[in-house]
Figure 1 (cartoon, rainbow, N blue to C red):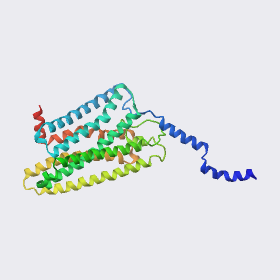
Figure 2: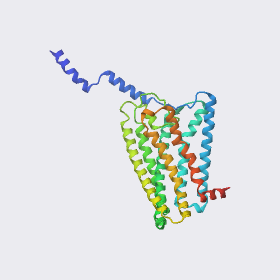
Figure 3: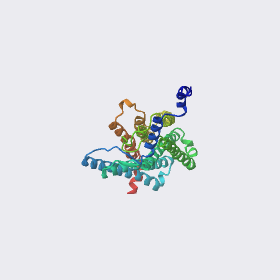
Figure 4: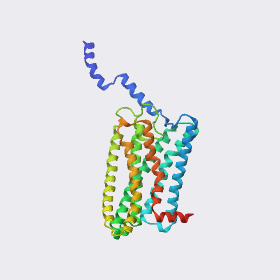
Length: 332
């Protein structure tokens, strides 16, 4: 009788006492996640010649980004004629570009030079944090710069009162602060997820979508939800930028002189080109459907949104900006 009743009750006991196999699987998942001390980044090539070619190519791109952004920072800081809100925000943009490309490219160069693929767990955390911090702050700053252009063209009489030095500092601090908050949330959430599928990343730097591919099943839902929330916030900034430029173009087309229209457009097109490049590549990297995803395509897209914008932004802003070109000429 006792044996029969025990057999009848035993199925219900499994609700409170999981089978040994389930407990073993859970322990193995936790141990796999906690035992990871390093990640393996994607190698661009297997042969030594191609590895060195990758090193020299990235070195040239990195030096070009350092030179271009460094010149803009120096010119804006040293030339008193450029101490205006537009150039103050441009100086912040160059600082963010320098930081973002310095977060990803040097480590990839070092791995190619020394024929390694590894990055420490702590190094990966730092890389994810700073890349998110700087890119999110850059997007917020581009939104602020759209507002700056809107006030300068649509409300020129109130420009000085609405964008004084204190207001510029607050807006820049808000952009940097939004990047910091976003980076803290995403980094803490991503690296709290247990990892069960090894430590190899199909990317040349630590990227959240690649880390989520290593996570245990159903354990990445929180981070996906946070990413969706971030996408909605980014979309709100995008709508603000679009509406600002609709008003800007309507105001510019009402300017009677052709020279005035040309001058207004010359201050808007660089910013619009930078925004378009940043948004198109970044959106495609994080929102593209899995059906078209492949390691080679992911690398190309990552280069387009993580390496190309910080390198070409100084060129875009200096090509049609006479005041900036004059300030750069005076530096020499």
